Image (cartoon, rainbow, N blue to C red; front, side, top):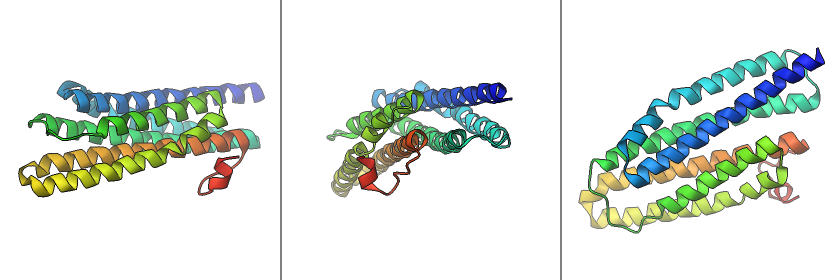
Length: 221
């Protein structure tokens, strides 16, 4: 019985890891579609969003089956955390889809000649997601903790981009539509950073049984 449960738990973890790879790839491709003005890649991101949704459904179903078998406390933590991580990954997929759609809207018009910091913000958010997922796969709480402070830099960039684009719109009314798309892209990247932070916090919980949400002191322990 225990051996069978362990096998199911390993398959469950592998399924979540595969979902993480898919969500990370979706975000990376959406960013690439935006920066390279690649409509085809943007369309592929939008088309593949259903895959992320199905992963979340599969993981929820597997989790329910595992929970019904009264696992040990450590296994219980893993199953419940995995469900939360899958929810965050599904939302990362949603943000990737939003970026892809805005990219296609922007590609239909001439690019704006402005100091665009969105690629820098994109690299930060994508790096956070990659490191959070790697920390989960390798069960490295220290790596997960290192992700969390980086979210502040993403937030700062998002606010800066918003201010700059608001000023640009005031001086260039014809560019309002394109600026709104850029603001939306930046906001989606900020949310992706938030989801990466959530995943990192859950990794610490599954590894150390320590809930560090809303507690800056515990994050540094």
